[in-house]
Image (cartoon, rainbow, N blue to C red; front, top):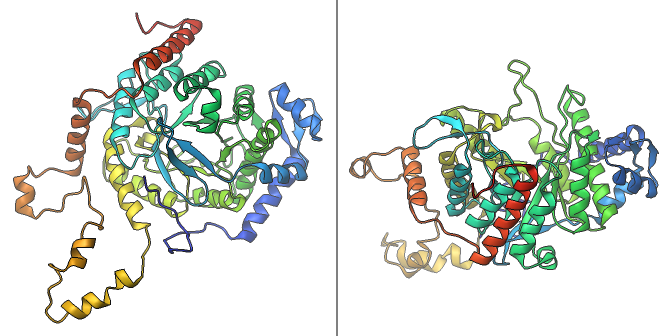
Length: 487
């Protein structure tokens, strides 16, 4: 599958830089001072002990990290992460300015495409969402999309079972506590054929979300150290909020955010030098002081933070294809389009949350399908212009220009199918459009969803592997005191 990469010298494609190298150096140096002077609080003793042994300054659980250790970790961390599909074929390359697109996780609500009503998400919505995302040719990786209200026990394990059963695409997954994390890794190893096979060809990346840039909770640190030991990829994103847990000014907030990410990077590299980690680097969140809601789509800092990832030459995790709207309206399409465009032109690597609405509380399968078309358009627009003897076609011009007829030329036949073609956008004239039902884009998206979900579900795994995965899920549910899948 093709993925857009911006800023390639062989073919100049559109790209945007949020900061200069000098500005990146200023943020980097400020982050180093924060880590060495102020430090971070770690609530997991093995992480504290690890950093103390490496020469950090430790006072109880307050750890100050010297600059040379951060610089070493930046050199040790791999600049690229490759994820594979379920058959073991390379599917995603994370690094440089290569953009890959996927859904998000854990929306509490769904905008039901059948009724146009907002309701609580159910287990079946996870399956439906995975099937729809799997059928979209430009959704490159999947996440669980929904947090089921009808099965709260071991929800993350249930989500992974659904993702493994109904899609062969790479997975980005979340675990809510430490419990269940090892079992989910077990699932991935079973599907891959063993721990060594999963390490050699990872099919999933764990998304870890610590408390904040200055306070790293036990569960997050334990997960980080666990996957680093196994040399499996993870996203490590400690959040900071402007005016809440860091300064309200962007520069100060970015330095705090960046410091939190670098602390996690140091820990991962100390556990296992070369451990693959993707970061959000310097991306603080903002709070709308009028509504007290954290907006998902704003023009503020996301481009700046991506530039820090490129400055470090590390894989970047970011957002696109989402909206703060509560309806699938003009605002939703505008915000989804702009966020995808900004993420792509800035060279984000793992662009997630496609289909998110209501500031991350609600998901929409219709928006996923519409965003797939937007992503397709963006991928085509980032291809760049190829100028050579074949594309200039001077001999063809000489032969056909004066007659004004290129339609039957062999050159036209060779290249006529190269232009981008839509799957959802309508390009008919008015009469043809009316004859076809006169549908809106949203109606066509709904029809596509019904077509996908109306077909017999395609199970990805062999029956024996699916049974082993089910056994792991049952074990975790039983340990949590939840209701068995058989009940």
